[in-house]
Image 1 (tube, rainbow, N blue to C red):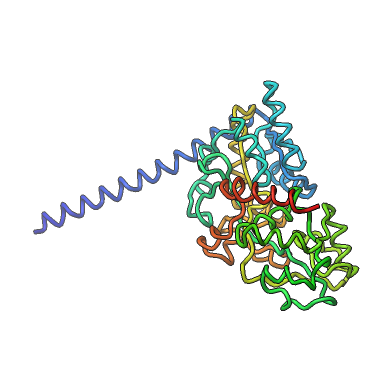
Image 2: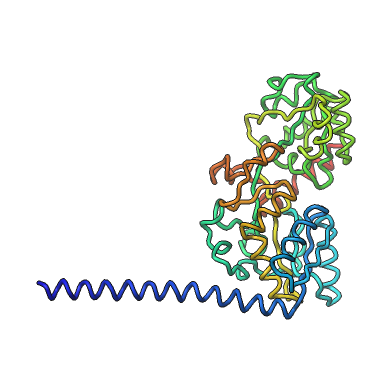
Length: 371
């Protein structure tokens, strides 16, 4: 009996030691790969990334990355997504390889994907805190159906309906159907859905939730259409209209600071769409600085990288270890803080199917019915 117990103990010790060895080897594997990648990136010496047009983002990301990796020059091209994508496509067609990656809205990178200019993103993940799905709300989330090329690192809702509290009460509009009330005719401002932006996103979500007939009826409400966000916000503040659709907190921030009677409309019964905002990451095929690209991607998707990006953009990451509740004060609700994964999936407004089935149809309807 003692011999059997002794053998069992020995066997347990062996398997425990073997497990520790394997764990050590696994840890050493990623660490060795990471160190090797950093050294190779130092030799490349540079990374070129197209990012959203934000001076604050450029400074925050540039300064923090330089502190972490001083030997890697980070060149950030700040422009609207379509502008950066057009540059990448033109250079690629000319045989030039200058850009390494793109961070943009959801629709923009599909032009590059369809042209065969992008490469899979996930193989670039090295750090466990980036690579492990458990670190992310909903695991790894992709915009493209192949789940390889367009990585979504954000998911949130924004307050897209704002009203003048001297002209209406919030309980007067509790459903999208209430927007069709004849008394609101000529009194609703709308960020033109025929041009990319929050107006387009909301218009597409209307189609998804309420259907085509709803859009056609809404178009008869003599909407004040504009592509100028400031103009719409000013019209609301001056009581020329009672409500705006498609604008967010950041447009109204100066008006709120001035104490003007503008408030976000409480969430309507149908809910609000979820977006990944400017949180779509794509990597250019045969980029000139592949190792520096790996370093940047892993840093961007790390806890520090997502904190820096989220604070600069006022948008919410999907990383579970990053605090995003403070964003509610700025009209943004992180999906991970308020929605189940199932609810987020039902309300999503950014997947490939949604973009090319719902958005395409919605844009065609807008072009037809809005004059």
